[in-house]
Length: 241
Image 1: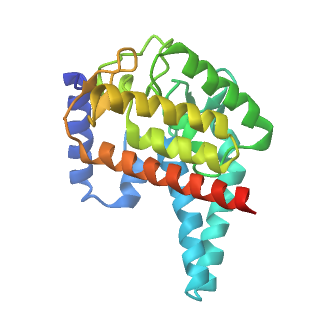
Image 2 (image 1 turned 180 degrees about the vertical axis):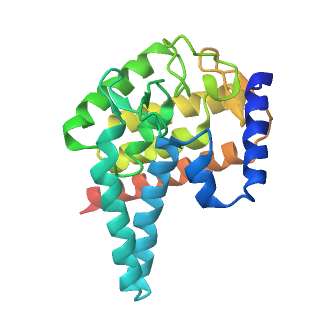
């Protein structure tokens, strides 16, 4: 289930490089042999920056809020550079070569969570996600099951990770794509019913993988249960009105 020895050798190589430059961000960003514009981190950072700007507004820190929103605006203008027309979704990019890393991973769907999906590409990415959901009994695999690199039990090369599925579903709901968000919710409920709270899951069998009784997976259950109750409460108020 774990990554290959070759993968770990590369990780050790990069750690040795980071140690050599004293873990200083600037030389790492300029000289590291591994430099990637990661769509996952970009999406989460953009969402967090919007949230932090809102907190700054509440605390009277107007200059900081303006700065954060300006940084978000730069990201939002540039996000199209990470669009893969071939895959119909956003991907990461090799910063050294400038080439897109056109492997279909679930990270690209975090752009809904990050407030980064461009209106002209929204429908196409929804279509891509629907295709993914039709290809496996359980959702959402970390690599598309039709891709040659798909390995359903090997760590991030195929298994379902519920903490990221939760963020993707939350992003879909906030963008008004409630049908797709509900599909992820129902698939998650089926996984919990079948296997309990595991570290990650096999997308073809629903088998729990990695550690059992895993806290971050249980946390996603509590979060979704809260959202379900909250949405039901809102619906009751609408009906009463």
